[in-house]
Image: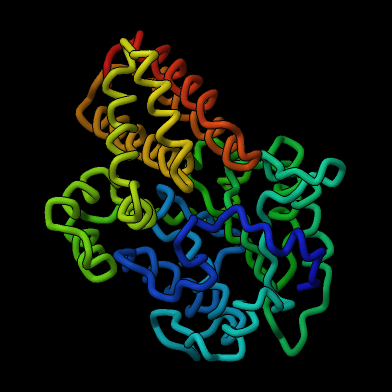
Length: 351
């Protein structure tokens, strides 16, 4: 893949603070079913031209996407490699992917605005248009071309239409890997042209085991609290296990619980605490959005009343916290706005 400006190379919006990038993560935790389905299609010689990887943030979508990419770049759509799509870290393919220097892999995510130099809040049409040149390249020695779009949820309308064109006319030996937290936001025509593969929230037992292995400093009580607050997301669990992450997560629960009657002084105090902590706003937003999603899903499974207002609130919060993280906005306004969004949703009933 052609190397861009250094400033663009060093800006990774899909990197979780304090954790390895999915490109650097070779172990896929707790997603054996999804891995098996992907491996069957790829090693059977007939992978889909578009694969839509769905699941909550931190469930392993990007890790699986890079695993698929490494296998295809190494073995193609064949059964020449391991059944679990494993390619070692020291393999030349892996090393080139780690260096962001493999010509057969294109990763599209939010970039910098060409005029202002500030982070984009959406995945723009200019990014998606890079697919045309990338797929137009001649692949050497029967090689594959893989494009990862992370996350596809953040495309604007123009970008979505450009992606649809790429899905309608894909070249041979190519695959689009779309990562999505909320596939319902994608155009139906995009979803219909992709095979959907769902990654499930991780069981509490798996999260507890991983935390015990990776964060041995946590007490059993702290570990149980992190598991409870992480909504099945290993990525979020590891974030909460750092510094004051657990304290912030409990505050996010309070925001939801007190949505109908928020306390302004408490909100100001929360903003001050979050502002003093490294990556505090990112952790708060991640936990708030994930747990709101888990509560909505639980209420829906229980046959609760219509949850349209809470789903709308979830959408607004994803956009608000994503924009705040991209633009490094001051926490107070973001938290006050989040409280207002939750308060409006609470008028339809508590969650």
